[in-house]
Image (cartoon, rainbow, N blue to C red; front, side, top):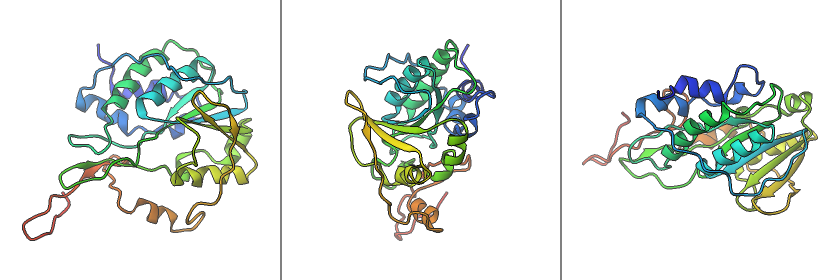
Length: 249
């Protein structure tokens, strides 16, 4: 029997985990509608170090690889928290079908892993979230993360978190949207580290991105992106009409 989107979400965001409040239901809402089938999630082939128990992890890899890394971290005792926040459709700018397939297969794998209720979190975000350029007629599902998409430093510290490690394909400066999150944590006293796959963990120092802590940052950050009626990102780009004007459907 095919697992429902509701059941899949409940496995990724169990009631007994304090981090489930941040798991995004948006992609799971499409599993039933799109008839997504679980595709076996291959074992993660990157090297993840053994993090200390007071460490939260942000996994910023291409969608399917992120789910693979999440399952590897679950085996080590971390609670995966999917923050994928976009929908998909034909002509999508960012191909999210592999992510949906992996979340479904990953839920089946997670059911066989015992994770303690207060396990530290491993937040999953898609490194491809802003890739591509939308054209008329495309489905623009590019997305960003915002500070409210993550727990505050106060909550992390209260839950025993002292360090946050960013896992990426290679060591590079954090993307601007994530920098707004990381710098808040850094200023509150959390130690930040960076872990490029198959590389060494190194200290991460985040500098202030544009509009840091400005009241209008959220409004400016969302300009040019499209939201949908389920709360996430994703909507059709209007086709240009003969008069040069395209309305929004």
